[in-house]
Length: 223
Image (cartoon, rainbow, N blue to C red; front, side, top):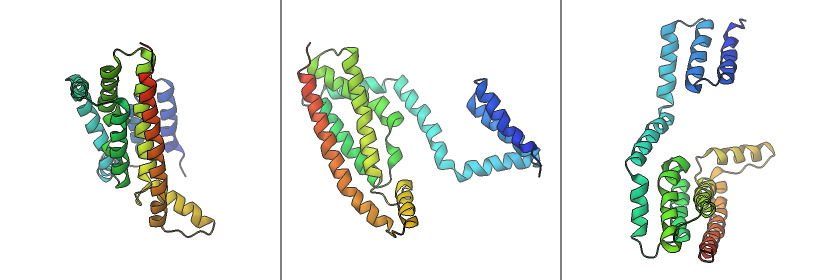
């Protein structure tokens, strides 16, 4: 057995310690590991290509994020805020409740990646919530603005966490099923998903109440 390929791990440690670009560090260490393991350069590159092709769905993130960045650069947040300002009855709580419904519903059918902190909260939901708060209550101080942003992020977390377990082909359902099976409880994933529905409904009602209470706190805020 040759221990030379383990030098790739050392390269990762050294690269991270020197605060080098993580992608370059990992790629370089993988190439070195492959070469020291007896693979020729063509085989190493072919292995990279196969891994990329087998996991190409993961690479979609690296395409989506630059697109979101460009949209922000050309006024996405401003347009979202302007849309909310034109809505007469829009409030922070009502807006986030609608987003909570969308997040739970899409997560429940396996579309977890259609929204998220980077995809929707930062470029869309948080600016829209801030615009709703400013429309109703005037200019916000820094502390209140941060609370609105935090509530926007929390709404996404609640919707995803309690919505995704309704979808049977999710890692958490499989994990629960396997752990229960090791203790002698043979439960079908479908049953676990069905019993996640009451939890999702409860989470929706509780967080919606929190959002409406947050609206009330904003109205009582001193100018």
